[in-house]
Amino acid sequence: MTKIVVLDGYAMNPGDLSWQPLQELGELQIYDITAAEDVLSRSVGADILLTNKTPLSRETLLQLPRLRFISVMATGYNVVDTATAREQGILVSNVRGYAASAVAQHVFALLLEFASKVSAHAEDVRRGGWQASPHWSYNRSPTAELAGKTMGILGLGSIGRKVAEIALAFDMKVIACHKYPERDQLPGISFVDLETLFRQSDVLSLHVPLNEQTAGIVNRHHLQLMKPSALLINTGRGGLIAETDLHEALENGNLAGAALDVLSSEPPTNGNPLIVVRNCLVTPHNAWATREARQRLLLESAENVSAFIHQRPRNLVF
Image (tube, rainbow, N blue to C red):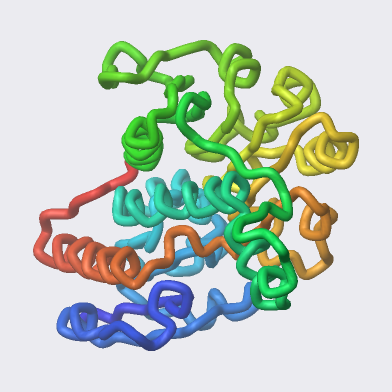
């Protein structure tokens, strides 16, 4: 029987989903989380591994002669040493597009929190502020309309396109910097170069993968191009931002605010200065994690495994 091991299943399924689609495909062993020192011992003897954020290094893969397939339970697959996998004849698949709606929704949850100050006003009412006010309506801090503002999008993949669609529905102007502007033209979206994107955006949302070209792309140079009234949103990867530079820009008033669902180190066990900055919202990398998105991820991961077992692999990354 095919032995299938899930190394870190908790984030995808903390207990509210059924593992049955995978259980039907072989002998299934599920771990909620796997520490670095346990990866090899838990992977030995597996024909198929599923991982989300647990790294599978060259050293580990070279010691797993039985392993033939890895299904990454995410879109990004940089946790796997794909060069070694290819060398060892191990196929690798990922899951794409499963969380586009969820992440785009989270982008606007963060944006609307800045624009409408919903939680601040609700908390003021809870503390008795409205009861004590002589006015039937008041603002504790200025609110703003999105209509007419410029939404800048860095990367126009499936999530970036969803963000663009929602922005257009709010009557925002949408500009984007994208690797394939001619191929991926969309009505209502103007393509610009990187520096123009930083200069013109009232809201800048990051949706590019993390690689050598994009690591630290939000740095002091590009932040200095942004409007002091602008908002930066990152639901992509923490490594896209030079965090020290962003901290400096926020503290010095060179940027109105930032909303981050990702950080350079997760969880931030050693702390992160951005967490306590007044004009920075940080959520715990859960933009993707609606129940619906996690269900799609589980089912797509099971489909990847089933396809491999039936010798018709899908969603291969190389």
